[in-house]
Image (cartoon, rainbow, N blue to C red; front, top):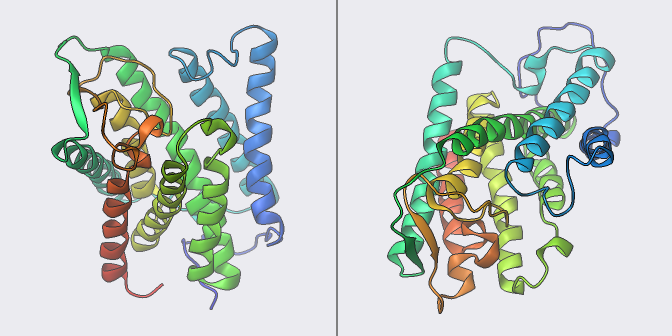
Length: 299
């Protein structure tokens, strides 16, 4: 059964062809990144060696996702002739609370994951150095807010909303989560990562998207999902010095500089991927999905 997921204040608008929805998502991300990275590479601003290193990672995150957001917004406004509320950017007297609650929940769930792995004996305190990289940590917070907001607007806002209009919420949740997973799990880039960790990471990415889809459905807005996503991406690197999706910036973290215990199993620590490759993350996200399903009802 089709369903209007987000409010629409336009009476006349164009519909994007349903077969083109996943293709357009892929193209917007590719074109947006190329428009920023190709000139930057030609000018010597980025390279394969520095793309995931600070401070280049800030330019890459901010530049590419800002361009993606601009291209996507242009499609919604100029081609579809729809408001941004139709992609879940709903602003009202509840918006600040939704965003703050989403961010706090993302931090809490991230702490729960790291704390559980630490209590299981799989992480150790690597250094007691109390110095902090406050400027990079703060800048990364805003970079992840932009990145996560753009991804949520496109996947949980636009893609899920457009599929729901034709085929209903269940197919919309599964459809956007499948594409999100395919675009985030780079098997070739994981190198010598153990197979079990890659499997856990792939399942985690799918559950991650399911959780955020359910959150956006429950709130009828992508603001809470965008905030949760930003906090989740930020906390592992900047609070605990752990990789996020395999990216390790080597910063001095806010809370504790943790590292895997030498003989700890990779399915518990997540190995080079970080906590997102751990079975603990699967459990935490699975519980989160169950809670949202129980509160929202059947999708």
